[in-house]
Image 1: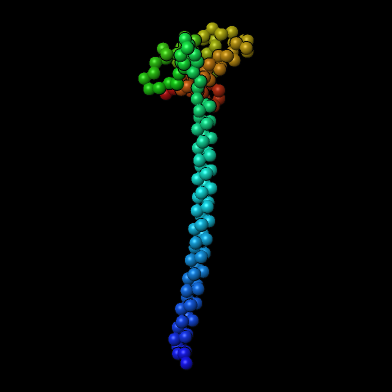
Image 2 (image 1 turned 60 degrees about the horizontal axis):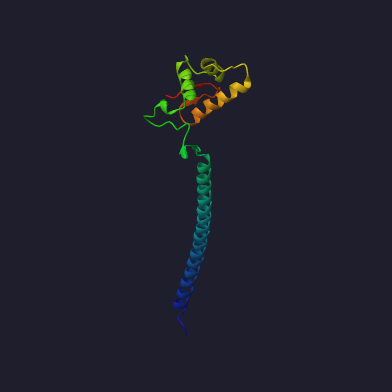
Length: 151
């Protein structure tokens, strides 16, 4: 005959192992789910990184062609960069902004450089040049639309 005490211990141990198996199965399922989420996140990150790289490449200023060589007509301002590297009309615009008592509107710059500001068709190209100087780091544009030199 089987020992009832031994049989009870075997039954108790089997119950413990069943419970442990259930806990481990649950943990394994959670680990697998998290791994799947990480794989998805990794793919999304790769796609977003590729898109950002493409956008940066498209947003990069396109150089012009002079004598068959690529040149940047309005270069990005870098430490030690001198405004003499800019075309003369851009140098005049910078000088007008610099000589102003404070931040200026495009109309005021136009008056200083001799543009007929009463004609909108002549003022808009000047505004475009001011914005280009902002984009390349030579000037700053304030939220109210005025332009000023960089600090």
